[in-house]
Length: 182
Image (cartoon, rainbow, N blue to C red; front, top):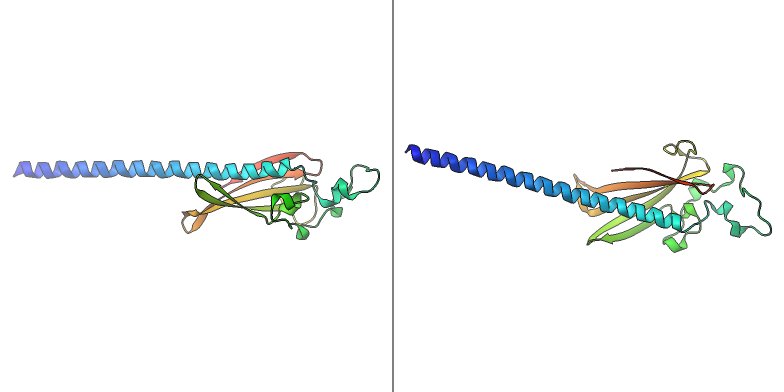
């Protein structure tokens, strides 16, 4: 009888150990999948911002040299209030349709990576030139372009997993990356 109890006890311990091991393996696989997905999402955000920068579009329609006739004197705009108001941002639906930086505002780009469909929404806002973490409601010589990437196939809680990636562009043409948020 005691051998039967020891056998059952040994079997129970083996089952608990196997269950614990499987749970650990499953959690590690989930973590690996999540990290790979986040890496893909950040890569999409970086690619889109590189595409925006590579286009070499004017900072604003008011500083687009193609709008001016005759000799051009720099800077084309001396005070920020001469730039396009934020309420007038947007207007293009594809990368090739955008004529200046703020035209990207509101654009949605769909990208597929390794079978997963991602939606990237671009927003453009004015930011403080000396502290790009501060958004401004009035015109400044710095615009932050943010790409918000999500996938309906990846849900955390009840919300799709979402990552944002930002870059600040200035009228002088210099750029600075800002930290991503997850």
